[in-house]
Image (cartoon, rainbow, N blue to C red; front, side):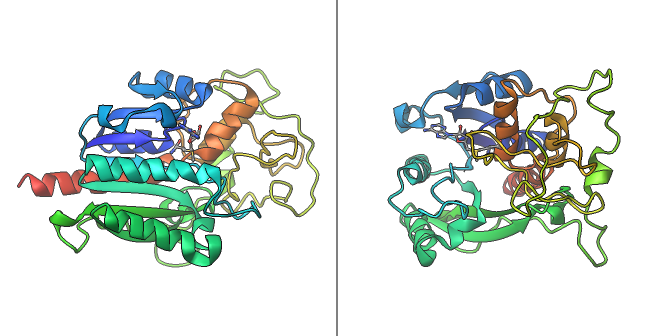
Length: 311
Ligand SMILES: C[S@@+](CC[C@H](N)C(=O)[O-])C[C@H]1O[C@@H](n2cnc3c(N)ncnc32)[C@H](O)[C@@H]1O
């Protein structure tokens, strides 16, 4: 399918959709490092600008609009969560794009905290905005570990389908492929995902295999907890060392933080995907991303729908 990607970042979501066979025809992000990473690894079609400067009528027609709209105003870690938060206005751009471009489907990704924002008022408003735009929706809470991502990252994925395609959703949300306990293969552990990497302090030619000097201190607080190598990682973060930097998860050896490459592997980026920018910027691009192998599952479902329509 032909896809417009908003808030594309380094392109975790887009890469998975492309791997499944879809085409991104327009993409945008304000962050110049994320855009440089995207251009080098995915394609030159991304525009670097504040989305508020973009005139929606200039966007091409597309089958699908996707986007992880910025979630600072929605994050559970942020106590000042209000619908009026200026950063939530970016969601309105996403909604207006859907309204004006009328794609067959849309996929919106966000943090779990969006469901409890203003006692559930925000998500009710969001869904009612999408209904007014002419879409039937489903809200899906996902634990990425259930899809083979070595990380217990929880996210909300809203799927929208244009009402004229039917009130019942054709988009079948991908089934889990892994489980904590059960018949499916077991969740993938941190050790399985990153143990093959050489010591970053040794001579090696692994891309982005460098780490933050931010001291490892166990304070039983996000980003400062011991990690169990035989379990999936806690959520790879995009912010949080208290000094404006990103808090990379400690390595299970307790001696250092994860390298950019190791963090990227926990987000299922391929090992030849090169991140551009300062160390902080690279960690942030990775923490912001949708895990690539999960995005690919969404992309495969779009491909299935595309084939079904063409029969
Ligand atoms: C959650 S991340 C999206 C990550 C992406 N979906 C991925 O899988 O890699 C949100 C992105 O929105 C971008 N952003 C924030 N404010 C923006 C604005 N005003 N205009 C355009 N992009 C913006 C940020 O730079 C960030 O890359």
